[in-house]
Amino acid sequence: MSAEPILDPVLADAPWLVSGGTARVLQLLNAGGEEARVVGGAVRNALLGLKPGDIDIATTALPEEVMRRARHAGIKGVPTGIEHGTVTLVIDKHPYEVTTLREDTETFGRKARVVFGRDWVKDAERRDFTMNGLSVDARGVVHDHVGGIADARARRVRFIGDPDQRIAEDYLRILRFFRIHAAFGAGQPDRDGYLACIRSRAGLAHLSAERVRMEMLKLLVAEGAAAAVLAMAEGGLLQSLIGGVAYTGPLSSMIEIERALGLAPSSTRRLAALTVAVTEDATRVARRLRLSNAETKALDSMGHRWWRFAARNGASARRMLYRLGPEPYHDRVLLAWARDGGDVASSRWRELAGLPQRWTAPKFPLRAADFIARGLAEGPALGHVLTLAEDAWLAADFPLDKAALAAIADQAASRVSRDPKA
Image (cartoon, rainbow, N blue to C red):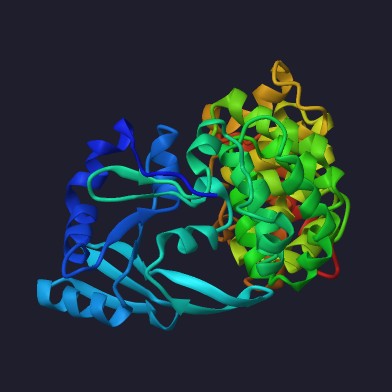
């Protein structure tokens, strides 16, 4: 499929295209019989009225020529993937990825044997989705060889050519199909693409955990994440990725709660809602997706006895906030709320979730010196008495007056002095 170039009024005077680093790169490479265009997501986003995001540039110039021109112009060039035709040019500390046009001569899984070319149509046809196969030149002329403009404006995510072939070239395109649909699509996923993903789902086992993690976390924070993940679950695509049950209901509830509270989407919170019912789930998912240490810790914290929040009152919630800290407390409350049905009008859940904004936990006021003054020697007993006193202080709802603190200290010291193991 091909189409004549179209001058699109949205792009003809787009500031990101006609000025700054992008314009400078295009000017650098549009000379001496070579041509360069912005390709992919930036063009798609501009047609949809969104910020361009990362700006990728394709060129007929070979990588060595791109590097030579950059040096001559005083632009830093980094051979980030020169064997595959990719060079990164850095202008005003901003990277621009420049890739020489390519043609696949043979594909096998993710790997493909490619040769550099000068054919813009063939370069577009080797990409994944029609809305990602667009390019725009320095004049704002949009070149559409795959029907991408119509699909972008209809918010229809459709594979270029045969969906089964596109997926066989790289099974990550299954996840990208749902992720791009969640971010830019509307309505139900394209049927041909959806069925091809289901037919090829066994190929997901060949993907590295790192690549799956990256796509899943991006998918979960997309605007249409709930519907896309539900479609994946119904197509039997989730269990092999997470290795267990997918809880699509709590995920939808978490998304509604975040929106109701005006919170930025959190991939970790949403992943917990989708996958974690107990801490063992958190451990499994962290290993399955090779999550970072911070993500693993957050998932484990959210999954630890979240159900206890169903019976929390003001005093016990304050104790939990003191123990966990504001962010872990807040995330665990939201997971419990999502698993409780996610009623965004619930005043009780809103009160629990808003506690860190209304109340700051005081520091435990008693110190080792307070117990040394009461006759305790330094050593294990001192740590034990501090723990007992802190527990009593929390149970009394954080008193700060001297009389109450003295009573707590006296009682804790007395208990330790009576304990033969102390």
